[in-house]
Every structure is written in C-alpha cells, then in structure tokens.
Length: 187
Image (cartoon, rainbow, N blue to C red; front, side, top):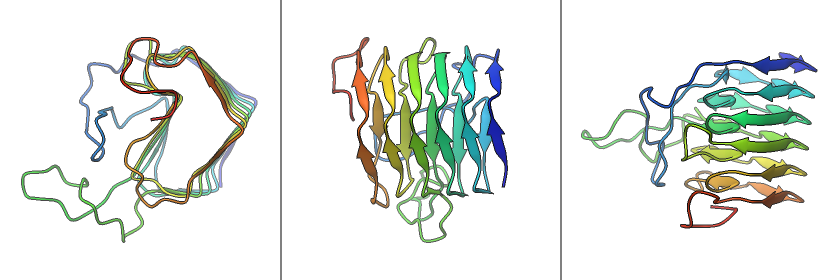
C-alpha cells in the first residue's frame, strides 16, 4: 500500500517518439509509460496532487493493479493522456505482439480502479491520440465527479469494453475532440 498525497509532479520528458503499442481491438496506440507508472500494486492512492506539464502520459496503471484510487488531483498541460489503464492478456495469434489476445483469465489487468473528483485540462499537447482517461484491457473501473476539458480527442476512451462492470457517473466533459471530429466526449 502506497499513498501519494498533496504532492506536485512536473517536468517529465516528452515521449511522443518513444515506441508505441496497440493495446487491443480499438483504434488507439500509446506508450506503456508515464511520469507515475504503476504495475503490480494493490491499494495505491494518488490524492490531492498536482500533475503539471508532464510531457507524456501522467499516470499509467499497467498490468496487474487492484483497488487503485486516483482522486481529487489536478492535471494541467499534459503531453499525452492524463490517466491510462492498460492490462495484459494471453491467447495471441503468432503474428500479433505478446499480451494482446482476448484471454484475461490470468487477471493481469487493472481492476476496481476509482477515478474520482479530478480536474483535467489542456492535455494532448504532443500526443494527439490522448484523453483524460484511457482504458484498455481493464475492468470494473469507477469514474465519477471528474471535470475534463480542452482535449484533442475523447474525454474518456474505453478502448475495448474488456471485462465490463465500469461505472461512469456525474462527470463533466466539454471542449473535447478539439483536433478531431471522429467521435464524441466518450469513445
């Protein structure tokens, strides 16, 4: 159990030229990296922090993560996505990259994540395929009471619907798709 509370994070390196991956059947690609990268955690909390001018993804929950709590934070001027959840799966075709198949029975993915009460503004400065919250191969995510604005594409992107059980309520998303017109605030 680790808690980050009332801290300021700023000045992370640009990552838009770093290797990208295609997490699942959706149309997005991104880097499996972030200023705050979590893998193999249980009950990690990030609360009341300021994440400012992080020039890649701000937060990445990669692979196994359970009961992460990302609440009451401020994200400003992020280079890519503010929050990204991206699990691993099995059952790939030999021509596909490892970790991209449909079999999630090993449980190596974010589950029971709470994203609550965050203020997210002006992201996607370098990476236009970005959102306030990106989710792929993740399940049972609770997303509530967030404010998301001034983004180049979707406010929230649930890339594949993997695992289901998501609860999205009482969020305010506006000024989304500012640099694209291919979908809406929720993709």
